[in-house]
Length: 235
Image (tube, rainbow, N blue to C red; front, side, top):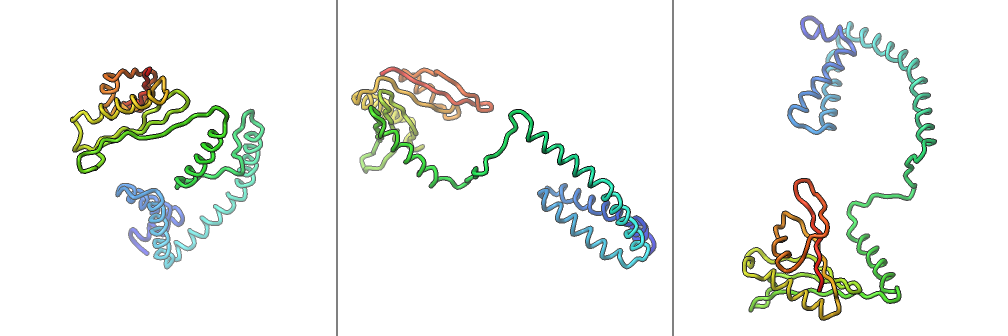
């Protein structure tokens, strides 16, 4: 071969590595994922090798390169293996070394598992002497019976927790949210609750409403530029 192909053929393994690197860089410029870019680099280098194998000079250079790599691997691998072995021993003996228990499993689609574990936990709670828990919702319905908003209440002993206040967008700015909270607090007070708690996020922009109804922020947890607010009020 002559010209650019001849130059590539003379480079042997180095030429293939250069071709693979260029193909990988090109794929990354096109915003391809890392794995796809690696796959493209491998395919291009294999195709280039298939083309250059017709050149005797490339075959000789490639054979010499592979022989040199094999010799280098025989020299380096024992030392690398020994270093890795020592590293693992040091990690295992290090104070407080983290070891993952064999039984741990990551479960992504965990809705069913969460429901099962929560039911078991709640059953144990209800079996505890003196345990008291009530749960109910206060809803707002229009004349047609459609629910425009609701809030859930959970009374645990003498503390009422308000959760998941929601009013449909088309029904907002009509005071429904305020009525729901006031109605929920009235019902919780009638059931013996002495304190009400709730949490919300600053991006929901309902903090002023809660403060108008007597809630105070007792703790704030930063979330980037926003925050999660924990609020409470006596009943």
